[in-house]
Length: 502
Image (cartoon, rainbow, N blue to C red):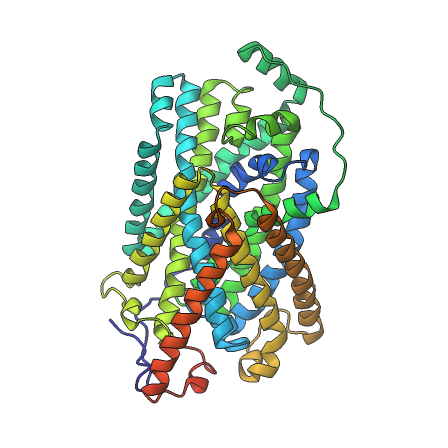
């Protein structure tokens, strides 16, 4: 193992290997963004934000705007600071070490919980496969709580193992599954635009003898629209995973920004086509009615229109999309922990790198343990949207600070600002970052208001107080560890003025 020695001020190579090419980086972002976000959130939002009705797709488009601004800010910072633990490095070097740690700790917590949530919602997709095959006994078994939790844990820890074994196995697992995911997801798009709502109504009547009620026109309510857009913003979270892999990317100054842009454009286009296809074929009032009583999925909805074989295929595609989330997001959260430990603001043993696999194995396992908490929390809460809400709040704060870091970088750290290779015009940087601050700040306010005014059986089912507790823990850790560094004679200001070793 090789790592930096913060007690002496010397630095050696971390032990991470730069083996990730552009394809693997882009796949990391794409697979982190696609999954539950595309197969469940655009439809379950009818329960989470009642009244959004037929305006889901416009809200999706609106949510993409701050996501693009955040992605551009990430690309600017990544081009200048290509290191493991991207968002932590960007804010700690470009803005403030404390804010960098707090923001990234929030991100780590939110994403780790989200990994658990994703592991938990894979099971309903498997359930829908057996439903399409008519195996109702198996469906009932998979709806059993303890069995669902057990299967979720198996999925999670399988991909913890994949991440532990190194980048080569990670790439061999992720990239083929990404292409398969797009191919099977394409069936949803074709089917959704081939059929119409009259076809769906006829199929529902034939299979279940049910009629779909006439839909009242959706009245535009700006508050509801903003709340929905703030939730749908979660669909665009994931490209930041590319930045966290900055310590393992080949030609990182070019590859990281390019991979971020490829991921955002690819996924954004796919999102719009996919969501539009489902709502084209399935009446929104039916989706809202079903979402109020059960967890629904895009393949489950289109299953009424397709033969069993095609239904199984698109459900398999959805399951693959969810499964792909796990290795990509585990890579991201573990590199954040690694970067903290490398800087000395987290226990140094967390920065251990496996001598054979060149992976931060301790950080990967600890992130897997936090994701396990996400699985158990989703089960106890009875609604995976609690995990989504925590993730959205964490990432809104993180993205907001990335935009602020772009604004502050030239003054706070002119040496690193001179290394920016994307959007070199300072005027353009200020425009992008300022718009990002305004829109992301607005989304954050809306999200907090929605959370605090929502009905919940206990205070800990609100994401805001949970997030505040997490931030308090992060503050205590930061104060304690920085105090240790100062006692050891480390020049903390100098430490945070330069990039960590590669």
